[in-house]
Image (tube, rainbow, N blue to C red; front, side, top):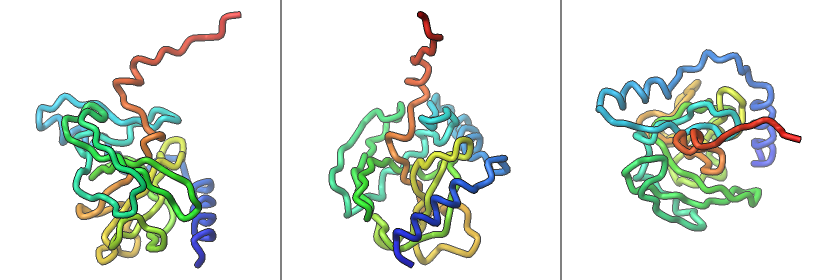
Length: 183
């Protein structure tokens, strides 16, 4: 199947996907894991709707793409004290994305695991959307030899690539004031 048809099929699945929930809340799980560690943390939120998508404790720092256009390191991204790489990548359609990687995230996988057009050799990818508003927020990546039929999320050997422009830091979100129109 050509990549354009794969992308079209995935977009149709995103639009038709059930938004009624039923998905495991990985954010609650991640928050519980972090609270056991006694870590004061922030949450990474969907920029479109504000739903929690990831815990900075799970920022993934080891898997880097050889396909990067640019790479920069951040030392305080999302309140984390880890050095985190932000990579600029381009898809086969020419669209550029800056992504950060997480071991765990609360986005929902859509479509099949795909090999064509991967940024990470040896990994398959799958589109990842916000479970609340269905906005495309990134991708799931899984080693190609570990993908199984019906697998909904990456294993411990996989990770999530989240589009930086699609998320916002909870701490920053608290500084935004929304007011009514004054005429």
